[in-house]
Image: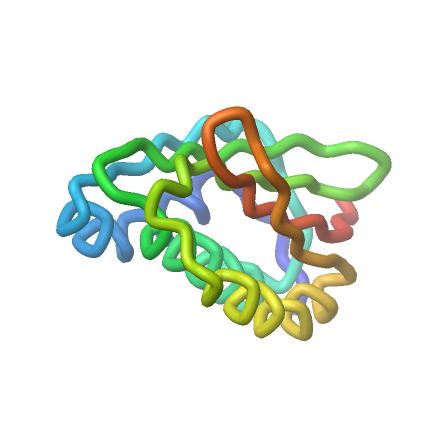
Length: 129
């Protein structure tokens, strides 16, 4: 069921639930999402995908910042999770592949791309504001 809500608030809630895992790896989250970015999506499905993305990032990172950002363009939201990838392992591809069906429910997709200082885990999904 689609609801309209602030993406920053949902990401903050999900990140808070995963924070103990990040802290155990000496890492932390920075939520750079604009407070006024409203999305219309299935909140529960999006929370589940976000949780998996952030858990995957935590598993790949040690002693670093995990930065979460997002922007909207043409009724699509592009969310990026950037991390240093120093603890990179091949399981990341399996975990991201497992997220594809859930992202498809949102009318979107997930991707892994190289970034300047590591990896970017990305989620794209449709929104109707």
